[in-house]
Structure formats: C-alpha cells, structure tokens
Length: 171
Length: 456
Image (cartoon, rainbow over all chains, first blue to last red; front, side, top):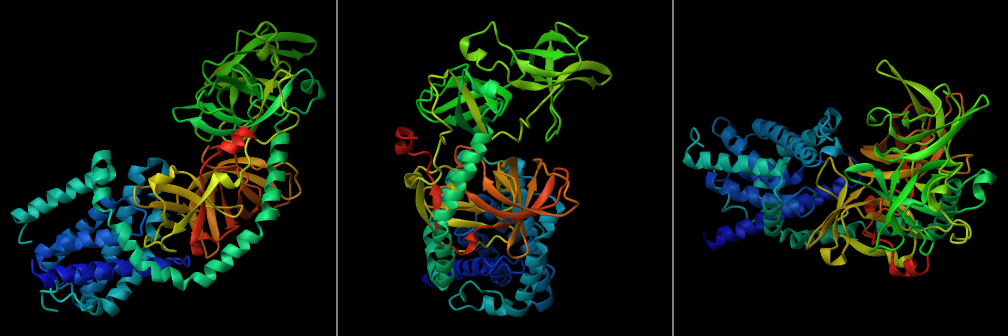
C-alpha cells in the first residue's frame, strides 16, 4: 500500500471520528431528527471505492463509531460489514453514487443499521425488552434525515480532502 | 461481487460469524475485539474541541446542581429517615421486649428472588436467625451474616418455598395454629395479590382472622417476632381446590426497600440509624465525560474517562450533586460507558414521595422507555401507588432512588412526575431533576466507604 493510500485511510478515520462526534453533539439536544453523519460519509465513500477496499472502510468506520457509541465493537463491526455486503450487492445493479439511489441507500441502510443495533442489544440482554415495534420505528427519523443529508451532501462527503486515493470509481 | 465469487463467499461467511458472535457473545472473542478497538479511546479525544463548545451550558447545569446540593441532601436524609421509620413497628406491644435495627435491601439473589441482601449499621447485634419485619408485618429472617462485608447479611423471605414459621390465629373465640411458609401456587411475574401457604392447621374450621407469628417453642431470636402479622387468613380457590392461605400484607417482589431486623433489646441501636449516608464524599469519585453526546440515535449514553483501575463495577450509580442521572454500563481498560436516564432499558429502584403524604412508597423497578419530548423521560412502573380517590386529578410525586441494589445508594433525587391513579403497569412521565446531557463531569458511586463502616 502506498504512502498516499495510508494517509488517505488515516484521514478517512479522522473525518469519520469527526462525523460521529458532530452527530453525537447534535443528538445531545434530545431530538431524534439528527442524521447519522458518519454512516452517510461511509456510504458516500463506499459507493466510489474499490471492492477490495470496502472491508477496510467498514473496519475504520466501526473504529470511529466505537469511539463514542455504547455498543460493543463486535456489534458495530458486524453492522458495518453487513452494510458493505448489501451495498456491494446493490452496487452491481444500481449506481449508488447517483442522487436517487444514494438517498434510498442511506434511508434503508441507516434504518437497518439502527434496527440491527437494537436487535443485537435485545439478544445480548433479553431482560431489556427493547425490540418492540415502537423502539424500532424510533429509528425512522434518523433514517429520513440521513437520506436527506445523503441527497444533499453525498458528493461533498466523498470529495473531502485527502480521500482521493480511496475514491477509485468514477463519480 | 460478481455472483458471489470465492472472496465474496468468504466475506459472507465472515459476516455470518460476526453476526453470530454479536448476538451470542463469547467472552474471549469479545475481549480480543475490545483490545483491537482500544485505539478508539484515543480517537475519541479528537473530538474534544466539541466539548469546549458546550462549556457555558455545562457550567450553568453544574452550578445549579451544586448549589442545590445542600438543600437536596437534607431533604434526602429526611426522606430516608421517614422511610426507615415507617419500617419500624407501630403497635406499642410489638415495640417492647425487642429492638428494631434499621436496614435496607441492597440486592436479591439472582437465581432465588426470595433471598435478599441487607445492609445495616455495624455493631447492631444482628445474628443468624434474627427476624426481619416491615412495620407490624413479618418479612423473613436472617440466614447468614457476610463474614467479608461487615454490616451486610443474607435474609430469606417468608415467601421462600422451604421457609417455615409458626403462627396463630384467633377468630370467633376460637384459637388455631399452623405453619406458614412459601406461596400458594407459583407466583407469576408482576402478580398483584400473593397468598402465603398455610400448612398443618390445628383447626380447619377457622377460615378467617389475622395470623400472627408465634414461635414460642423456638430459639430466643425467633421469638422476637412473636405477634408480628403474617397476613389475613382466607380460603383460596386453586384450580377448583379450596385451600387455606394468608393474604400477604406486603408487596414482597417490589415493595421492599427499608426494613427492620429484630434483635435483643440490649443489643439494638438507639433510634433508626441510617445504614449508609448516600452523600459521604469518600463514596464518590469524579469521572470526565469524553464527549457530551452519543452517535447512537436510539440510546442516551456517554463515554467516560474512567478505567478498570478505578475498581468501579458496571451498574454503579451516577450523580450530579444529589441528583441521580444514570448508571455505568461498561468499565473497560481504557474508558467506560455510562447510561443516562433517557437510555431505553435503564432500570433502577425508586421511592415515590407523594404530595401530602409523610412516608415515601417503594415503587419497585422503573424501566426507562426513552425520552418524551425534550425534557421528559418515560418510565414503565410495575409498582402500585396507593392513592385516595382524587377524582381523576393528577398529583405531583417526587421520585428518589430506593434501597434495593448495592451499587445504587438510596436517596438520590430522580425528578418529578404527575400521576393520575391507574393500575400497574403504567407509564410515568418524569421530568428529571438534572439534565445530564450537557455535563462534562459526573460523580460515580464507589460504594460504602471504610470510614462509614467505622462510623456508621
């Protein structure tokens, strides 16, 4: 791996940490209408990255998110790897970088990611009784705002300074 | 992925393994992955400038909680004394010939809910076999003192399957005796009305009256419970079979917080001494919040700069001043996770101080259902709030932490709620006393300090 690519991955990690930190800071107001900025960033870069790079991207995104979130790292990692798997599958038929599909992808993947976190938590702690419908649908505001963010800022996220070596696919 | 190539298949297998390990955790794998993710602790510090942005708000919140500390801790002590006093015998006949030592519940045996752990003031003369009571009602007896933790013991409830206590009942000029212990039928979760099992009745024609303990033939400690109420004798229809039972005077699963241990009169403490002071400085330590926020949309947690070196265990209470704000979820080698009140699933035992009533009521465990609007949190409650008919008008209740767990001190202010009479389980919308979301330092409960053990 070239020095430029190593630097690009480090910068992706820093951008992702900042994205999750800003997201946490905004969510601190108590509103659920806060987009999953870090996940939208990961999806935006993933839509343009080489297939071989996507597991690294998932690992770095999980590392950044694990810095602030309470979920066990293995659960976060499994969530991001799952998104990579389905995003790559989707990428074979649709252009995930396009405005429509990046919006739909953000809506679906952010919702699925949050449902996965809730499901994993309820499986790990059955006494918590969390996986009922109201808890799961509480993820909808996050998914909707993330979709709007992906529609408006997807290309901007993918072109953040330093990420060019990761961004191999044409926009 | 080209129709699932070899690498795609391997990736899918790896993903399925990760999913399986996520939902069925294996300790060694979790430890290894936690170790691999250890650098995330350093990464979190990259976001420190965001904490500086909220500094003004932080100061306002902390100043308010700190300035209210003196008055709130005073109210807390008054509440705990009221709760403790309510656990002492009321009937003058039950007050003589014995001393009642104040104690509170600090936990239940995980596999046997009929076994309680109790904390009491040191040198209170408690011995194995000492009866446990609540007001004029009999609760159970001490089965063993903890040799490693002075001032703590294990007690067994009268609801335990193998528990036996002799009782007498008088009704219509007739006097009968029997043995009481265990429950009639299997107790269902959150069942409201429990019946204690009656065995070997001397006179089956007696089917009513108030049963009281009568341990005349037993050891001195056991006899201290003579006269305490076991329940009202009733005939219970158990699937077509009519059996004698005692309607339990207490809510054993949810309503036990402050209790009394009966000891010989010369061994007791003078008056109700609180087994613990929840505000003793040595029992708390400060922990810095790494980021005032949480990227998990459905959670309300904080990452704390607190490590295993602190010897803090998961579940420890978090406070600001005298206000309860949450509990520890995980304590790691590099950092920790804390759950705030609005984090769904957070549970704690609560006392309700109802407007116009002197003694607080134990509500059992409240379970957070998450935030409601911007400044309220919904809690599921299975306890009963006994209210006189109020014509549908809501009354204000103040919630405090109750004695039920060793890592959660009683007497921390939780918040206020409006309550209109309804059958449990019900939802309480609580306005927390402290908005912990904007704080950058939290106090973590370390447990009863050595100094409090020496001078309770």
